[in-house]
Length: 187
Image (tube, rainbow, N blue to C red; front, side):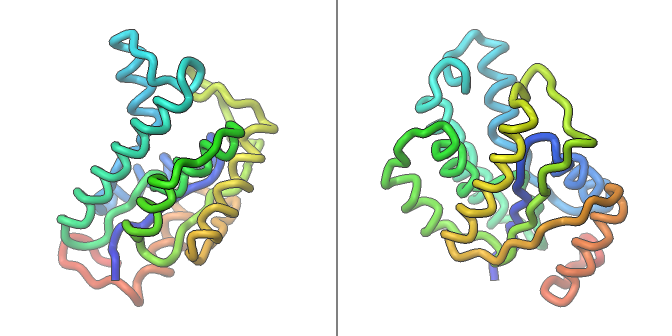
């Protein structure tokens, strides 16, 4: 059983806050590719940005997520992934761009834990920032597309409740407890 656990959904739905809470509790995690790429590209004046070159941005995200996957697989115990390979396919879909075959091959070859946790569209907590430029409608559509893509890829998608970060973390850990026993963090 793969121990890389994907958290997906729309922007501003609480995924990263949840993963930070799980990290605080001792769980390994991998950061979101998109945000890290945007930050580094902005710092160096690069073009791999969603508002400059979407195709190049998607290739960078694919590479980042493949490396994150490989790193997670080399670790012991569950690793919380802030998005995954299916999210890159979802991004291209949202942009109306064709998804190259190698994206689908990567998502089918490199499998995560069989359950993906979806943070649903949550307008009450959504905010924009320097890297997150989507509006409310785009955030809602993103959550819907991510759910569809992961279902197409054969994952079971569990929608997280509208609840505090602590409550969400507790729920996730209860759901994972029967499947993971580790010494680094107790489930």
